[in-house]
Image (cartoon, rainbow, N blue to C red; front, side):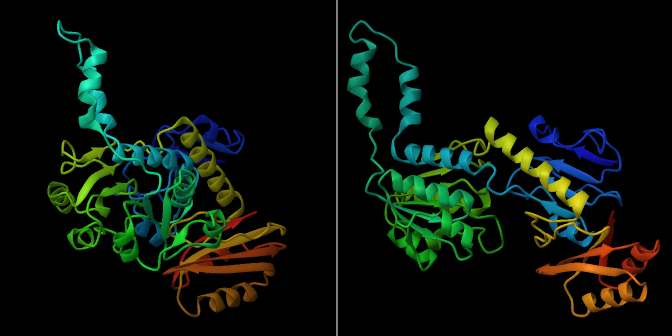
Length: 389
């Protein structure tokens, strides 16, 4: 039996994927083999030795100590693309909110009452001009990050007759296939900053991306630029955004990540992190996260990991040995030497690396000595050994 601990409420359409005769699933599960999480913060958690994997039902993994997990041989999964449509739809909404003063106008209309001199309809006609905005058709939109969400946003904006320029220094082949051929490719971020009337960002928070919306980069932008941040709060320097709003350099800043610095600020529309908050998105993420854990626990295959490489091998033998180890020279040779010395028959194998860490699957035909896992695990640079029969 495998134990799956839930740190948040996970949609049943996801947890129902775990067969009752193989898995125990719940919030009170002890000594889990795997954890499913949404927003719970895990940085201060101590992990039990049995824990092999953590699946985040969502894209961002800021709430998970990813590096520490890698050091302990715990594979961290996310669910890229499962909530992409939900976020895309809210970004489209954000484009409208950045262009038309719908929020202030609706708040003003909410307080209208009939007076002796004028009914509500006449008050609306008299006062609506102060909430006038602009149309997005014909405007230039810069999309920074063309992954699952960014590509959908770019295509949707193109369908609404915007001129779309995209930038992604790490665009995958899959992302390229998803992208409309009408999307112009920018050669640099500066090209996005200098050309676009609207800019939307869809990249993770990393040392390279944090603070990208700062005074220096804002100075390169068009006067009256409108910025949408549905990725992470720390991609923007709040004080620089506010200064640019006051000067008129930025016309509107829309963010799905409110902070103390960005709430109740004129020109900032702060949405309470609703990007993936749809029933469909939560279901999709839960199903994908559950399937990732099932495949890893039962076959050792890794798909959509953020700290280990994606590795997949058909399970055709009698058993398999799955090894998490440091990505350093000589480890694979040492592993195969031990396997050979113990008379283990390797029918197939695969090895891949991701930055400082690597993962090896050995497909075995015939028996595996009882001490094989312990012997391999004792090697320098080997982090964890799992044997799956």
